[in-house]
Length: 294
Image (cartoon, rainbow, N blue to C red; front, side, top):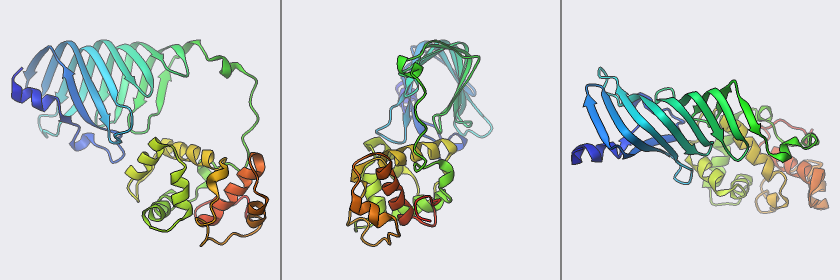
């Protein structure tokens, strides 16, 4: 392989139609390709090929891909970059989904998905010994779809008696009336100098969630998966005693019963969640369904 080709191959950008506005993985590096054959519209790599997909968020985990043979296919009419990547023989992918193995797979770059077929197996923190006839991994939002799935072993905690229903004061995706509006409002507060509910909220998120929030454009259109993830993070904060800070809510009108709940200073449990939900509703009344403040 000549030097010019290698430099290009190791910094292959997923451009043109391949890059969706919400794409998590935007760069590809080919780290191993013992044999390469180049024809019009195709790169055929054999002999044990390895490549890595890098996420936009530098703190997120990359996706490492191996296969006996990897074939890149271009649309020669548009020259817009690779449209499809075929993975053949002993395919293995490691990332935040765990380790997925199969005999064949297709990386659909414009479709922003990775589809595994033929003897699919999955090992992750949640499950061990999962098999399926097909697995589709959505690269944009992390969703997974499996066909004809079987599981050899489920973690013992998943076999415990059903847990109590979640507190009704916790948020659901449907509780946010205007996702674009509330994300823009929180981003504006975070960018400002003064203490605010938004600044307090984001400061309590884990580092990776903070990085993902800062990477979003103020008017970003969130996918259903992104909304579920953000609500999950919000609900963790609503269970934190540290959420209320007098300076952060100094310019927010707190209607009853929120001031009484603030004075009570609950440490945990349902009363703490009720307080924090009330604080959240008061901070963003036009965007959040009201349950505490009537």
